[in-house]
Length: 558
Image 1 (cartoon, rainbow, N blue to C red):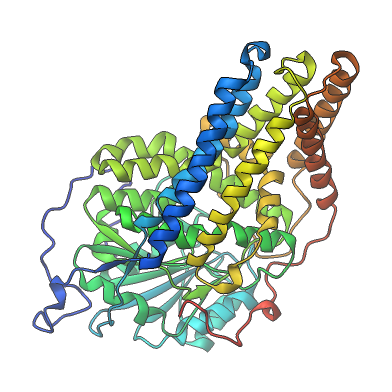
Image 2 (image 1 turned 90 degrees about the vertical axis):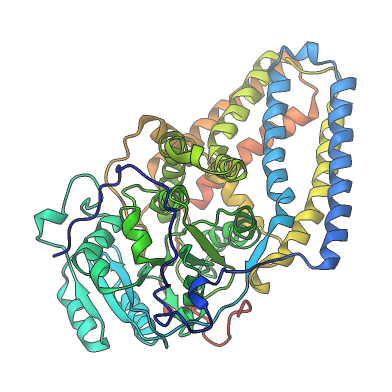
């Protein structure tokens, strides 16, 4: 057996010599490919520059005018600081959107490279029998075995299930399990029991490190295209490349409101945001399917023992001087949560893991990165503070309703200014959809907006989790029919509804509040909580339904 994976906490030293030939080209003389650097091309075309400048100047001019009017024309003294702080939270949200917009010109796309034939490639898919259906695994493994490029397919079975063994034997895949081996069932660390990273690290220690040059990590719900390896392996001819990450997409997004909204939330991330991150020099590993150079993976200690293992792995790669490549193509499709229980649990896990990464992991290594990469890391996780910001806004709204600390007048100006700002931001959002990876992703994404408004209590709870640092058991997102909505989600929305409605009634009756924008805010907040309670009662479809997979067309990004 190979020596155990290096501890996650070991010291990092920047690697300075990677002139050895790439594993994808055992013949160093073949077109000098072992020293070929991946070329990144701008995503903007010549006409994009003019459109971007017009939209940027236009909306920044409007924002500047509105902010200047607020600063000079409003009597803020009458608000006792409360109302300005409320508006400040809105300005912060606009600035976060602005960051995503202003980085569009940085988008870069890697130039395609043909895959060599000399490397040893292993594809490993993790599976948890009690959380994932065997029929789903069979479809995934069948697709993996059918991939055109020479490789070996492994199923990493956490349950040592007899059905999985039979499936592997029938389809031509290799079966692996760590069940019953106490050396790899640790309470903490890289071999932690019942975790995806522990499963991968055990397989790497037993087989992967010594057997392969490149490995592909795949979630059990993702179905890879036959040309998957041909599309990604060529980039490893660059000896500085540690990982290649294609886009993530879903075949069950038509399953209902939750599935469609959850998919819509990812469209911009897997297009413009990750292409811009690549332009900055910091593409990210994303956990559902990715390819790694085994020597680099061994150097960072394997899959990171953290709920945000993909983000930690990216940071460790960069701290050691490795680079990654983001391929903005849909080379696989998987499952997105289709019911409230699975969706909310996943969002809570993602939010707390990202915030924990920002609080505890990134400060240790961030100083080794260029300033723009550090800035990207800090801004990237701020989205998950949405719950904290919303909680502050709700609390300030209640205080305003109870105290009447408001600017003079009826507040129509605030609603009209908000409408104007929205009117200049929407064309920018529509233009950004030009860079989405599939035309079926274009449109008005009202479902994702609704989910964002509904789920804020769970982001708030996740922030509390991250501050406390205690997460409990690692939970795999279930691919089976979901259970009931978590009671905590319902309790928070009921509490918000009662508190805001009570403060609204009190303010109207005793303070004679005439500020229309505050009434609109109270009505909107109450309506969101009522809608959350109503939608929670709706039955959700199972996330895995083979009938939802559209195999009739090739992906538009091909």
